[in-house]
Image (cartoon, rainbow, N blue to C red; front, top):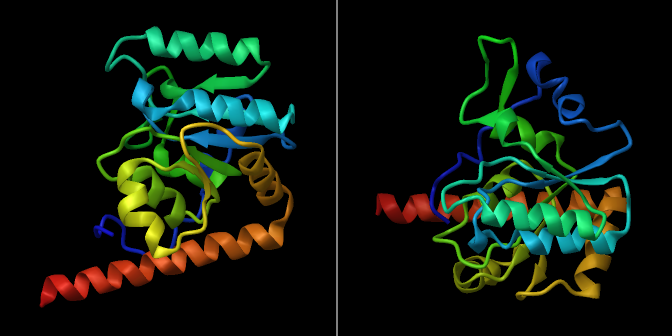
Length: 215
């Protein structure tokens, strides 16, 4: 695993700035934040995340997209919004709330960083069809969040064989994947075991990569 994150550095503790992030997204205390931390372009497979939330059938599950659309036009975003409405999924396109660094606009609006979003998330969806590597995968592991991953080629070839415990799909949502996600959302002990396993594995693999680089 490329040394993108220093897994020896503790995860930042949420501070006062981020205390109102969930209310800023319109979430109630009982809501579950299902985080889609990617740009809105077709290869991200976000329709699969919508299908997951639809099949979970829990009105408290809110799918939040943190990154902007527009790199490849807005047609894909509109299609996702229509799809979410059609299947009664609460989709929150919140790109105007996030930026690479947190700040306050001249109008007084708080803008949060992506790293502010992860600690607030209950689950991460990463259903990309194609990725060069997958930074959001490592981010979710670093922040100890359970995640669903579509088996894109790099994940299947380089990451999955290492033994990460993720809910996996292969191009389509399955009843088994939905059951696994529901169990992770509802079983705190299982969720803790899974995320700690993934974090430890990533830290171990980065240590090995660092040793090879020094050699």
